[in-house]
Amino acid sequence: MHQNKTIKLAKGREQSVLRFHPWIFSGAIKQMDKDIADGEIITVLDYQNNILAKGHYQSGTSIAVRILTTEEEEINASFWHKRIKNAFEYRKNILHLPNNTTSAFRLIHGEGDRLPGLIIDVYHHTAVIQCHSLGMVKVQNLIKDAVIEQSAGMIQYVFTKNKESLPNAQNEDQWLTEEGPTPIKVYENGHTFLVDVVKGQKTGFFLDQRDNRQMVGEYSKGKSVLNLFSYTGGFSIYALKEGATKVTSIDVSKTAMSACDLNVAETDFANDHESITANVMEYLKSDEIPPYDIVIVDPPAFAKSVAKRHNAVQAYKRLNMLALDKVKKGGLLFTFSCSQVVGTQLFYDTIVAAAIESGRNIRVMHHLSQGADHPVNLFHPEGHYLKGLLLAVE
Image 1 (cartoon, one colour):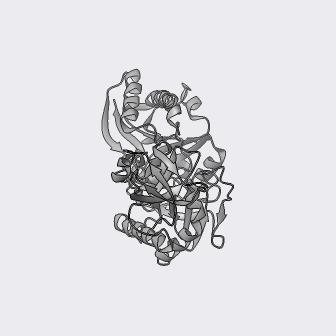
Image 2: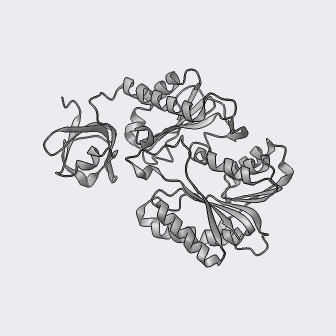
Image 3: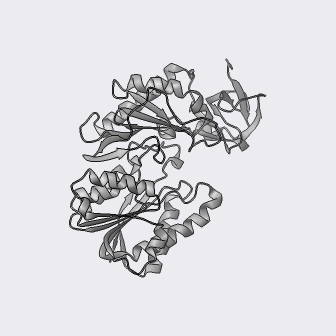
């Protein structure tokens, strides 16, 4: 029955698996077979040799096993087809696919789709695979075949982009099919974006903010908007298209600002937009910047490990203090954190600390999060990484 190599958990350490958490930490392992290769599929046993799960093994990290299944099933081509078919069906329900207004979405969100270590984003006819485990790298061609077949003609091209997510894996970013077009013109809630899946950050665009961009648009009519850490201008496009009188986009990356300008050029409102390449923290310290009706703070992850959490919290506090100072009386602040190690309550408390320093009366209008195509596995709360607040500032 044990065709795969095995690891055995210490007594009592099987409880997380029985509660369906998809990770096994290295400290939970009591013994293991010799010569288990990184990325190999292994069988997980409890201390009494009962089979608990199968998953991808990886040494050198705190997460030793990413669980793929707790059922008696083989991890073969049929397995990948079944999971990816399920993911497509879920997205069709929540996004009403196919439709003429949205052609970009997340297809696989790791643990949220019971495929830990795997991200797949779809941009029109192109799927971008990003692996966060060597196990997923080893089967990415099987995954590619399943994505193309289960898409029913939607997906024609597949690009794999693992250098950023697995920098030491010695694998190249590459097309797994014939080379597809780039940049790709996609639609999101009827708005047009050009996405460079090859050179852009992550998979090329930040799809998790779709619903929050829509909310920014709803509040932007007749307002001035300051979009900080704007990247390629996602929030800015929504604001412009929904009637903002002035939108300023700030990012430290010249490449991102060039892409932002291209996206703005796809609209009829380029005269209402200004792009500035600058360090956001330094920019906000200037007394010459006028206050805005709406300020958006969407920084990159300040902390990617628990060890860096304290410094990240201090940075979030300083950043939001500066941002609050640029909000007009009666204006709005959209503020976010995508740092997984900064939990929802800690983020909230950090914004409270910044608000106390500002001395202004502030109301919470909405608690914000990632879109439904970035689902959180109920048994894996760590999957809820994007936290946000919409604040009314008097």
